[in-house]
Image 1 (cartoon, rainbow, N blue to C red):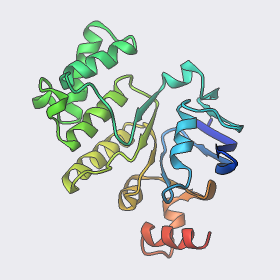
Image 2 (tube, rainbow, N blue to C red):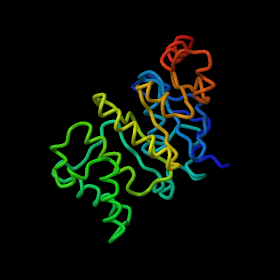
Image 3 (cartoon, rainbow, N blue to C red):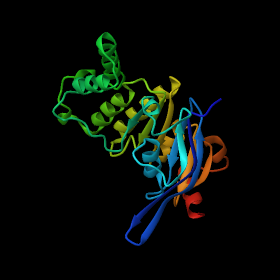
Image 4 (cartoon, rainbow, N blue to C red):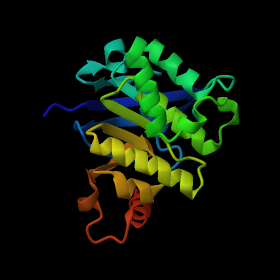
Length: 242
């Protein structure tokens, strides 16, 4: 089965005057279709840099990254992904329904298909009752859910989520986790970064662990945690040993 995402020998360095920080050093991994993969590591490990390369926001110094067999800079590749940033920005003067309608138009979704898609997603993220309220009045949890809805508007084959439960209370985290699990059951490929290791452990099939710009672990959750109490314990031990 062809990988949906492939990263090969990726290197990225940031230069500040005479100082050079190696953000990514020869990073390689692949993600299979239909899998849910957790991308974890301490702050400054290279997670965000990797995501930015995958999304075409920045070019690597060397190495390659492909989505669906095409370079990540390809417009065709980007049209098949959905992205939720750590702090999703939206038009606060718009209603949730208006925002999703605008996003649908950007993907060329029109007419009846647009109306059905927007209504279905509002229901899926439990915002139907708030569809006509200004986004500026939404709670943090509601902002994450409308952000997830816009990431799904084009019915993407791959979802890239950056800290999807960041700043949420326990109920908000539970709702986002339930949505991710529903998407997983639908066969979506999900690649997401999170510091909430209990959620990674619960919903992911595989884990990729990065530290100091290098991949230090990539395996199934069951295999990694064999003999370990939980992912948090395993994570701390692995980071300390590197």
